[in-house]
Image (cartoon, rainbow, N blue to C red; front, side, top):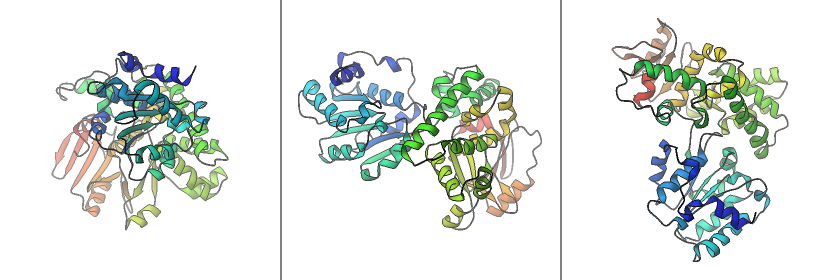
Length: 417
């Protein structure tokens, strides 16, 4: 297949055809935010964990654009590993587009490059075109977001990053077609859907899957690709299996304290290697680290760290049954709160609080009928929190500055609730 044939095949809208790949897909929430930057010259980069829907999002942006501009003013191209070995592939694509499709100077166009991670030095080439001031709006994404993050330094001031996270509970319900009209009347439905969300909610492709083994296989394929392909492609990794072992520790106990020296001793590697490997897992969105809120920012960064999964569904890759998953719901609930808040801090001294966010102390007590909150109250007072929020499974009540709210309801209220 010639390069021109590849280009034509990937741009069906030039022949006024529907974008088949996304015909039945609802627009992702992030699209609205990106749309606000459409007229800005900066390159739009979409980052995120594998299989969260970056390609679909690009095509949805194109679908919107088609309502406003000529179809031939939009070019989409998805690279593969073979094409990525050609150092001049971007120039060749743009030359064909300019001469064979546009048949006019390359300007005032929208160009979408997907899987750009397969290319070396893509940022240098895009910088050159960007600096020509031809009003070319570039959108890029790639399966290996860790590669995009590492190679974009030369584009400072020329690129806006948008993180496409795993689905949150509200978007999960939206994609399933569940409309929220009255959360009190829909209580039972929403609690049932939350259990499904714990099982498979983060990845758009499997939101309607019911077979645990299929979910496990899907999640494992994501993990394996990142650990044994994406990360070693960017960083020098001697033992990628160790990366998976560290991830498995986090999966066994989301919210674990990251004791680097203990990990190094257990794994038979150096403290420095553990530190680097944990950093790679974080950069690839497989884990999320939060820090102990104490002293100055420098002091906090050196103190205790807690690690959570970058998606609660990653845990399925390390379990043997759905029953095991539901036994870990209290830990997964805490992990989910961490991701939903995009939390940065916990607090631990002589007592502990799960999260400290926007001057609010937050404790997750999922599954406990009568949770003991003495330590949480003490922590909130010590931190001089404006409020203590206890996130529960079913309990809902308010006592002065202390509020109990069920997780399913809190996830639908908004992040600043």
